Image (cartoon, rainbow, N blue to C red; front, side, top):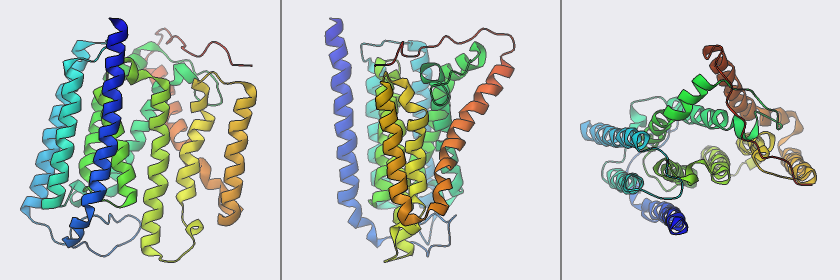
Length: 344
């Protein structure tokens, strides 16, 4: 019976991945129909391009009304998931409700984009969406410290009180960051936005499987961390080429995003897995060789930029850990859940 329930979780998960891929393809297929909407001229690095030149009441109202409905839905789901507790090897009706509900709002967003186009970007600064996701990633790194350390496999003692509170209630913040970012963008088919929507669909899956073993599976969490490493470079490169037709792609900052997010895995993420010494050396060597190759075209004088994202994310998790330990007072420590030993 337990095996049957476990297979049910796997079946729903694989079906959800297929739905995420299929919906991403649907956005791309329907995207040519959005060419009728007129967007303003690009106004610089802080400008968000995918918005209407002329707005009206309904473009604002539709985006905000649907965002609020989606936000309330996810917060209600999070509340009930906290009451339901963990059920590692089975998927419940609440998990299914979350999956179907998020799929429904994905469909509503697609319809709203093709009828009225605008998302929340008309009314809020572009950095608000970016920063909400950055802090979400910091929380993920922080929560995984007991399982893989803070950096280079080094343990970071965490006190229970604040860590336990964040672990229990992090779903409220992450669901806000996800839903807010989801409605910030119209469902355009440009490859930069497509990679972002696919990443958000994966995060909807992560949210919907709370309480199951999938929600805390380190391999799956690592996929989520690495996928943002595709979206960051894609959106940067797309925007750059749109502004500098025919220019060399190595003049853009996309390598900063690529090697920055992958660098988080190299420095921290890989230590959640039982890998041999030679394998870890190979990971470092592959990363270093790839960076040297790319920056031989971009210029070694820009190589320093690949540390920005690891410092921001890992440093942010470290600051959160220090602050949490201070606020927890003399509370006990969170037990480590590291892999017992490395493969030889």
